[in-house]
Amino acid sequence: MSTPPYGPPPQQPPAGPPPGQPPHGGPPPGQPPYGAPPPGQPPYGYGPQPLSSADERTWALVAHLGPPVLALLTLGLLGFLTPLLIWLFLRDRSAYVGDQAKESLNFQITLLIGYVIGWITVLMLVGFVILFAVWVASIVFAILAAVAVNRHEPYRYPINIRFLS
Image (tube, rainbow, N blue to C red):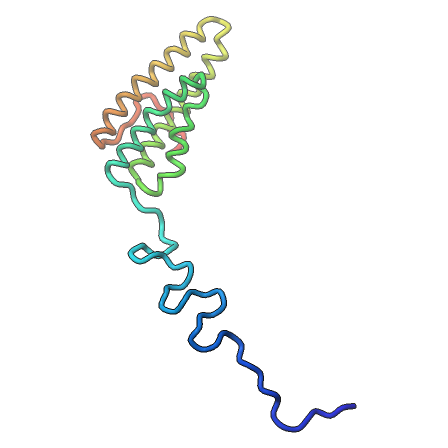
């Protein structure tokens, strides 16, 4: 058995960098800590910034005019994607854009029902008439909606099933 030595324990250097030097991996003296936002910017963790009036108008126009173009390119089946994406990503930044995208999305889902009925009945030749009528309705109402949102007014489609309220 050994006995502990007498006297004070041996001196060990203090943990950390020498005085006056930055800690290991830290910023140089006088600089803000890493992860801090640049001067003049809001601190991290704040919500999304609201859209300007011009941006609101632009995104509302895209929500109403994008679907007929996409529907034309995809035979009527994917026109709902434009307002869906705008509603999902911008509804927190602008109540107006969220409302208009939701209104357009409801209308596009209503039109999708018409397109599906048209494609099912296309073998009876009446389907072509239904498809054409649904597409023309989408163009006419999209133009009416675009005129309204360009004046920054809310637009409600007259023929619309409101799946999202």
